[in-house]
Image 1: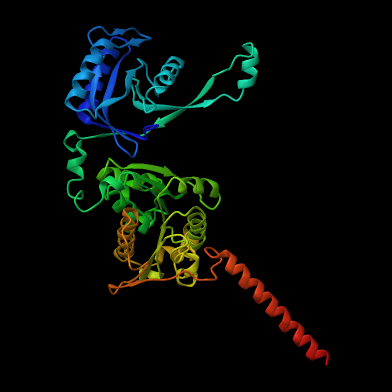
Image 2: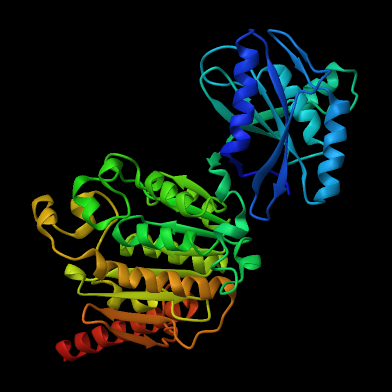
Length: 453
């Protein structure tokens, strides 16, 4: 594992550090210790033990040195009891107010440690709060000039990019992943799903439901993308509630997922995917599955392009006017019909590329009156999440398109690729366009000849 994506800790462990912090801050001294725990395949670090400074630790108002002999003794005892436990990082406290910031000494020590333990992180506290830090190390661009300055010797000077790592504290009774996941482990391939990354684009009525239920499958990492905030008119049809109004939809959905399954890593990006296509593609390339839940034909066509060009499976879902029906399309690039193959079908779905009014193809006044129950939006959303789990687990399906209507009728269809699709069969499409162009030209020439005669 190269780096930690999230640090998870029980409140019991956290309060142990808080108690140590308050004791020494009251004397104006720095303090600290080590964090031990387990690493999971999705980049989650789950802290199970902390080792405080130790009897021979040294503390001053500007420095802290742990009792490493004591720490090694405790480490050996912990690893004897459970060989999977390892040193995750260290924690220490600066005795002043404000936001935690790594000192130059902290950065230097972290760079040295990460040469042996690339996952190592630092949990840093002040009187006010805690934050988790990591660094990415990259080669300095001025290597050549520095080498000349040092007499032509090879230069290994490096720059460090400081990163913030998400940090979540949960109640100790929920701290065992086997307890939280106990009722799904026998019906899912958790060993497989925890290694998967899913990109979800669009977190409206359907997207928020999809995000919640995919988090509850035990997927290792979920990337959420949306550029809107939760509005008053949204809450009657959204996983977010009244207290979430004004918050980014990405943040609302992240909190919902983590409140059900803290062992899933959730990353959020508030961006306009049409304007920031390169960033969208970068996120998609990190993913095992793309979920298009914006309802926008324009956004879905961008996702379709990325999916086909990079051979990333995708799944799209949407509802029709007043949520009277909906569709779910699963795409295995160059094997099954892509989004563009079914353009005529999906053109009836909502348009959600930008702005509240544009999202539904209505004026702003009409939008507030537009009807449609959340339950009718949720049915195709749940179907999408169900099919997504099958794709991630590699299960075979005899269909790739599901049509739903509010009369509770569901049709499952197997739809083949169009042999002239401009997206997934571009060469054939170009050839057909050329033939049609020649045919059209011949017809015009014939008409011209007849007119002259």
